Length: 136
Image (cartoon, rainbow, N blue to C red; front, side, top):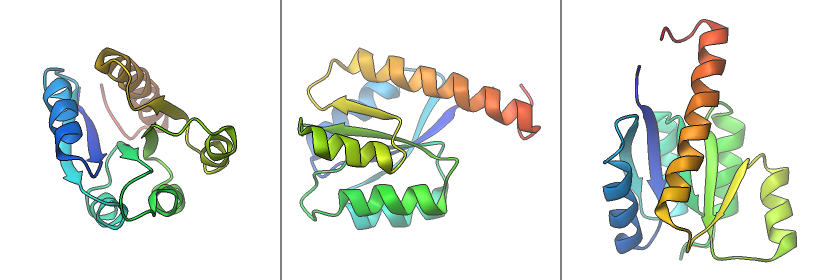
């Protein structure tokens, strides 16, 4: 079984380091790259075509929603998981309208993130197998 390829986008190096270290302990995840802002996330995603984009939408460049929308439009098979400190219901609804299936609080226990990514991985692998795109 191929690992789930993850692009990690966050402007805080410590956050990226902690998340990457935790995900690297899982055999079915492969953090293929990191992005430091929204523009970087879009460019890397379009190049790498990850299975999952794990993104903080409140990065310093302020274009997190633009990145999420661009990925939804250009890479519809890439699952988007948003890590955010924003609790505003309207902002979360906007993310849902853009097709974000998972919105997680940034201060979550990393095991919750792992569990969410495992769930996405099972769904992704099932869909790919049904489409004949992946042999497991």
